[in-house]
Length: 268
Image (cartoon, rainbow, N blue to C red; front, side, top):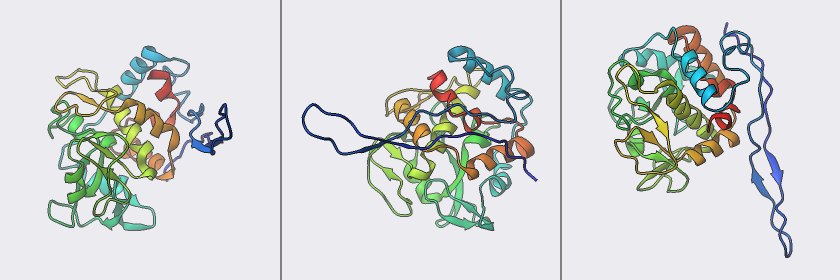
């Protein structure tokens, strides 16, 4: 049985803006991520708790880079069938951007299949599919083949239009906006990658920036939007279970921003 660490979390706050003349309509905004407590704070995260800024980032990099089991690209197929299993149908996986529940057996490259989506686009820093950042399970998710192609290597931002099997996700010429239910998931995966890969072992130093159109540079934007999504969409049971399964059964490291979403603002 998976041990899910206890946590305290936040709720969205409804605020009303004051204006000089008349009344403004109420606006739904997200409160900054509040401090959380997990069962790993006195063990796994003990050298990070209480730190901020570059010191926190450096400590987390050391923690999540130590004792890691690296997966091959082919090993991701079976791993994803476990990490992304539909909680209501053990024979299916949930597709990240689409939200569709699809049979685990429909993995591959044909129309109607699901394949391995790199949330940190593989071309941003030339990750490749050799064992390393391009096979890091924390940012690889199942997605419909056509939807995966629609996202391509676009940076993340708000705006665009929906498309076939989008599930509410949107795309335009230079950016991709995930459906609301996984915006925080996407943000925390991107920021995990930025802490995990700091230019060692021959891999690129991955970092978020606040623009789109990053191309082959080892950057993904927009940081301001990713931070907003982290606040608006806190970790849910699916995301927390996924983090635990990766830790227990596969890579043996954790995404710290799922356990401590408030660390996003402490670093960035």
